[in-house]
Image (cartoon, rainbow, N blue to C red; front, top):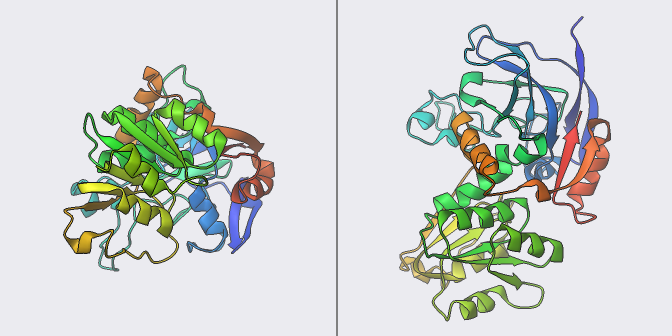
Length: 358
């Protein structure tokens, strides 16, 4: 009889429940990871609410830290018992998208039609990480050893939140001396703020209204905080920049209002780097878009994955240039995953990120 494991399973909109599933079989190129810590992402809440469709019965989650339980017969360079992470995005390494340098879009543009976010498989197209075990596909492309001395919580943001936030700064092509505005200081926005500082921005304006998040934003590198509950953020940012506007605006919430505000604060030729997951159609206002003549760049990003990306992010943590532990505000056992979803989905008790341990 197959071994069983506990897993958080999508049943129907507004229902993710803890249940049992067989422990996955390991194919030649796969690895079975025993999860030691994972977390709940805002995208999982979109799944919970039925705003992002996944198959019923799917195990949710895409941010794994753990230990290699079993290796596929063809996997080389790893050892069972080794501590590892895998990115939320698990590229094959040999698809057309990967070979074009866009690993996150692995699987998109196939003969079956365009499927964006094809590289996001955990908790999307295959069973995810909110479980006792997860099967990691293409293990030699995706498993990254955790450096000795780093805890699970130190690297827990690397698979998605750090990778996404940093990629917003990277896609925006921030340069030394740039002025950057980051709209929303949730976990991804906070990492975008940290990424902007690492990329060389010298004036970083963070927009939020929650005092605890604004405090962390300062620690992450924000020079100015705009409280959108007290002032119009567009007016405040234009005042802070003496009417010049910002070089790069990063949208990290996924709403029409923040996307539009990010567009309105750009200098001529500025870049809007969009990280938010949108659940409705976006409209681009004619004036903010300068009728299409403002030399603006709008760039979208899905967080990069793969072991080299994870190695780089863990190097940032190991160097001491960023401490992501303050983003973990709550901790739950896997047995309490439904309670954790209720807390996180309703944004109670100042929650930023929830650590889940089987």
